[in-house]
View 1 (cartoon, rainbow, N blue to C red):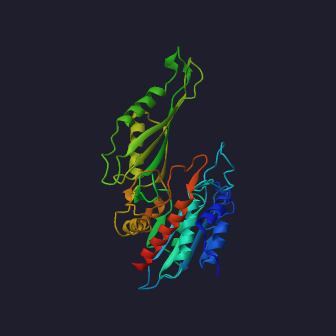
View 2 (view 1 turned 30 degrees about the horizontal axis):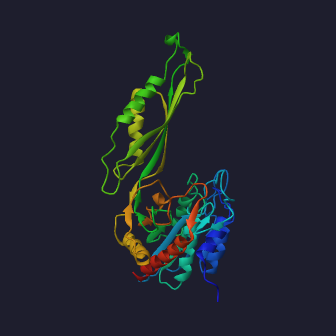
Length: 381
């Protein structure tokens, strides 16, 4: 009889894979091997070919969807991690348990959650319906050739889950206290205002772009986007840089640059916000170069069956009453929500992306128990 999967041991093995975006680092090969042993049909490198480097993606599935049968439930996540940086107490890719904590890059975000998902899949092996894993290696990077490529591959095979749980680290102060039911959208904008360089003593020979840029900034600063939403805080525009790159005190610069980001709620679409800002730029500084990149649209999975299912499993295992939230940055749920209801739940997020990232060993085991409860509830429905 095969020994049960230990989520702590599997987390260690995944952490030992140096899978900094977009490197696979052996993480998905390991995951594929383990899931194959659990009866999953595993597909790898799915339409994730980027212009420069291939992006590793993995889709694994077990069971069948039949009329009158169980649902198609999917876990989603990513094996890629951010660069570790300098200053770790130990080697970031040599997992180490010190005291009650497991240290290593990806322990929290999110190899620990993936290990807990796999452990749960082993424990709930006899189920109606279908269980899948949607795993990318491009969540921490551009996120262009990752989950979106996986979704395109799935669509070509008519694969569409009924519900998805993303294992992002959502918990704030204790495991189970927060479940994400939505996320704000995000759009970055880049503005280059052109002028004409000249000597400051001869301003008639130049055209200073800075006053135009200041006028744009002033109008953007005064802009009220909305007053919030039942599940979202008010949308927020932040100017993140203003740059003239002028080392001389006696030269009118030829160009001035600005970058800004808007985090927006479900009152808006990214394209509408882009049009609104672009109109201001055109009015204050005609002929300026304007570029925008929409990272993702805002979405909300209304409280209901899926959030109740996850919250119920959390309460069963921990007696914690989870708060439903839309706070934080973006995740790949911004893409997956177009397939079906999506929620996010995972480990404490206090050390993600930090030096000496670490997860409590007890939390890893408890998360595996909660994910097991989620599957039992999902396939009992």
